[in-house]
Amino acid sequence: MPRALPTTLGFWAGHRNSKIRVILARVWENDTELDISNNRINRATGHLVYQKRFYRTKFCICPGGSQVNSARIADSIHYGCIPVILSNFYDLPFNDILNWHKFSVILKEKDVYQLKQILKNVTQEEFVKLHYNLVKVQKHFQWNSPPIKHDAFHMLMYELWLRHHVIKY
Image (cartoon, rainbow, N blue to C red; front, side):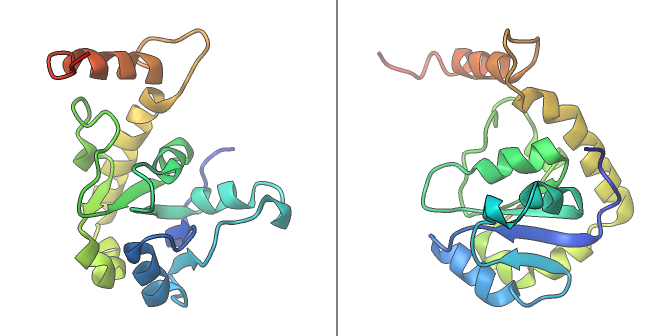
């Protein structure tokens, strides 16, 4: 599906399974520019409803949850929506290889109260640059069979190689 011009400032849908997610939902669930949903979007609500929300949104909010990772980050990248990492600490995928500041917005949890203003302060020029860089890194998050140069498999292998002196067997 081709990416249309985004009409929504920010999007998040998920379970309230962490403190930051509870705060995010309470503060922003009734906002008119941020599309914040109480729960995950059920596939029964319609064909590709969840995916279409990514396509029509400039920024996809990725708050920390109850697990160490979030499929939302990969979903954001896949659908071309700028990830907004909302966490005090997040070990981002391929962090040793990719400069996440070039294709995402990284915030501390305390920034949740200013989230809308922070996103609105991103100029159109900055947004275009972030999106351009996001499109460039999409290939690094794709799995192919067989693997293709610079895809997720090769990124993972390279990441492991970088850490080989740290890993004890």
